[in-house]
Image 1 (tube, rainbow, N blue to C red):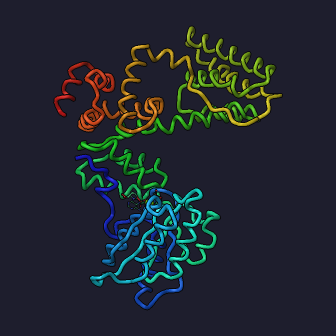
Image 2 (image 1 turned 135 degrees about the vertical axis):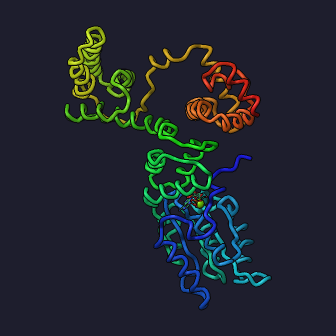
Image 3 (image 1 turned 90 degrees about the vertical axis):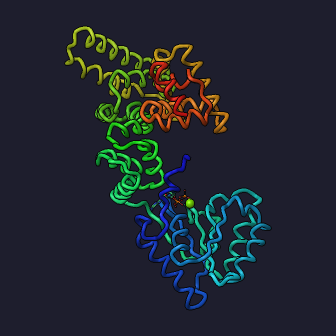
Length: 419
Ligand SMILES: Nc1ncnc2c1ncn2[C@@H]1O[C@H](COP(=O)(O)OP(=O)(O)OP(=O)(O)O)[C@@H](O)[C@H]1O
Ligand SMILES: [Mg+2]
């Protein structure tokens, strides 16, 4: 059975929840204070970025204190009326069987629109009267909608755990799963998560499930996602640079080769440098860069490299004289490369797979091609067990599996047999 590791390895007790020691302590003290009577603040409002353990902390708290947790999501308390019904629960501390209860209203950010206008007020009313602890959770407690509500709450901030803490946690999970992981591999995942524990665990599962050994190479492909963002940043820094030096430095930040960078710049200059005179100058600079590129290829004289780079970076940036930075144009993937890499049959194959994904995941075929296919390819090439499960779930044809694994028909057959 496919069980997400975020659930399989979900902390059961507060001790297992990493990071946020201060927040946890504050929450525990507040819960304990209920033993001495109803405290001044009858609700605690936990807030902070996604995936840092807000929800899981409350679940672990209830477990540690053996309290009954009544959990509601924003979608469950859309309207004032529903909340009022829910309020009945808050009128008593103990349950019929003597267990005390905590009421959790999670994902408050989800309250939107007119239907929920009364919602926040209704929650505030419940909190004024509640006989048992209420915990609220949102990403942003400082949303103006919560201005009155906040007065009645003990605000507790959840921060991102340190990368080193995430790393330790990933090690624990690997140990439980019987995976020997290279330090560099786990460091890579922990670093890129930037404190989002949920995404770190998802990345770990995607790269490590079913493996005995996890190497740096197994995880490096995750960088593909970052690289897409990275290239946009680099392009922006080049095309909108104010100084030659700034534009040149940006080229060094790109983790694609200079040929590819050239294609990106060439593709995107016309939609960003819109003044015709500026554009003519920029295209001149690019054609000079292209001439030097040709010379390098022909003569293998790499000393031309500096001219190639200067023209395509500083040359382009300095052409921008009259163009105003107006609005925002998205950066596009180089058409030329797209044409080169994809034949018609390949495009049809990709569309076929995308339609299968679309049926299961309810997303557009286009998005499936852009966001899902690259990952599927890597999974299919590296983790046949996971690939087999996905293939079965998506109901992929042997040709599609073959295409994704990028190997001969033999592998495809094997994948089918494993199903
Ligand atoms: N601090 C943590 N320690 C251990 N595991 C964590 C931690 N934070 C998150 N996780 C893992 O990530 C999953 C999601 O965490 P959780 O639901 O608590 O995040 P959240 O802060 O409530 O995020 P959101 O704002 O998106 O609701 C958990 O089930 C758990 O597996
Ligand atoms: Mg949550």
